[in-house]
Length: 186
Image (cartoon, rainbow, N blue to C red; front, top):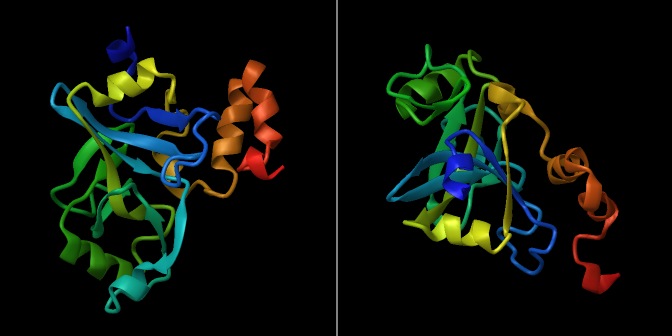
């Protein structure tokens, strides 16, 4: 059953057949919350052209901002692996935390106590209503996998992350690992 496999902290890898969907084509999503009311996740492999300093000038760092998903793209979210430094964080799983006190976070970044390997910022998030994700799973839109990187996923390079995940799956997915992003342009 699909709901037995869906868990907070797991990764959703976009099936290679998701083509033409700008948000989700070749996306890898960290599932941050999953319950009977719906789900929330962050696309972890789609960096934007902005840094945290571009959006919040009083933060003296050039950490990349990622496209977290199509919902509430005017809001900034973050995940991290340092709950002992950031009060009021919510554990996702495996030492990965969501949010927390942003004023403390800004101060710690400015003091150099938080590095890009500790935190990742997102504009927007990916959200699903009740049973919507399950429906997408039944339609083979996503591949579910455990997050073998645990909290080190935060510092993982996004450049070829989808391709790496597809190659790890092996089998019928290997052919897709070298396919162009838009096969229609091939």
